[in-house]
Image 1 (tube, rainbow, N blue to C red):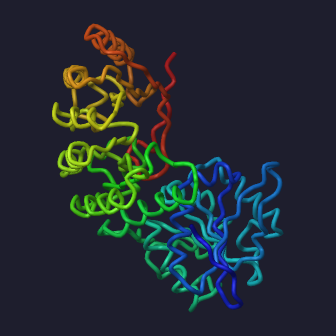
Image 2: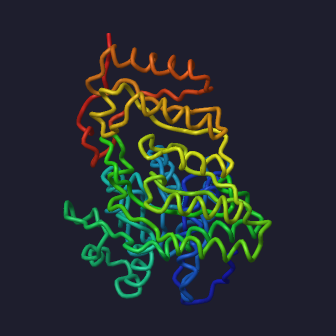
Image 3: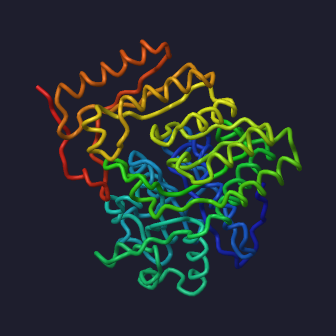
Amino acid sequence: MYSKAYRKGMIRVAIAYPSTARIALQSLSIHIIRKILGEYSNVYTDFVFMGNDGRSITKQLRDFDIVIFSVHYELDYPRILKMMEVSGINPFGFQRTANDPLIVMGGPTLMANPEPMSSFADIILIGDAEVLIPTLIDYYMEYGKNIEEYANLVGFYVPSLGKHTVTKAFVRDLSYSIKLVHDTAIELSYGGAKSLFNNLAVLEVMRGCPRSCLFCMEGFVSRPVRFADVTAIKDLILRDVNRDRKLVNGVTLVGLSVTDHPGFKELMNFLVNDLGLSVSSPPSLRVDSLDRDAIRLIAGGGQKVLTIAPESSERLRRALGKGFSDDDIARVAMDAIDAGINHLKLYFMVGLPGEIYDDINSITNLLLRLRRLGIKFSLSVNPWVPKPPHTPLQWLPMLVMM
């Protein structure tokens, strides 16, 4: 676990999360940021959270040189302003002075659309933390709080300069990244922290998604698609299995579409059949990437429920970028039963652009068909909501059916 005492002359960095410690400490992102910053001998870091009363914070932000807000949800925006206000920092960037800390924000919602927080941040980071956090520290030693200087750096958006082009900063080779994520999760477990995932070993097998579904914000903002090297993943998990088999008795695979990884079956065979590990995966898997062998490997990893996202009718599914049919879903259901999985979880959206009653009836017919096959299923049905910039459907209104 992290342990570094403050020495005079160190750069003081607050890693701020706009919620209580109980919630914030479940976010792997803040621990990853702290691990990256821990590589710098001249940087002192500390977490800052909101108090349980919702009106206080655990440490004063004014005591730091840089404040990094890790932002994941739009509903956190008001709490960020509250944290600054409680610390005596003017939330509006143009009203702050050189005596105030440098306010830096980043995270998926801001990468998708930084404008809602542009009046309050000195710098908004666009891209991967492994690239951006070291760049921030390296150039802070030169630029300090001269905010304008950062605008020429890749991935740095400086709102006070008005509209300007920002090129996303991203990791091209995931070799370092998969080790960073995995080691951070393992170190938290050694330190007695509650597991952030179903299993302690966390393997990020990919970033981005090759599918480009029209409604998926994450699929667009996380581009380009990058796959982790299977050999590197194997070496990493072997290291920890040999070190502490009791700790690493299962693996969580992380990625937007893990079954699209070209080495998915090879990796699953290694984890399940060679090492005998349980394997959990993200909440939804692509129907058109699930064949009989893949489903058997998933079942062999201990999965009791197979989660897929039909979204809507075949007609709308094709329009959204999901080209599989109801027959494909039925095939997956039968293969799941044969593999020992008797429960499907299905994600659907309603109110999609162009939806008609026939589409809703098609969903009902699909469910009746699955029931006849003898497989149990549970549903998650949610209204389609237009996402922030980058998704092709962003300008379309929500559908109101009379």
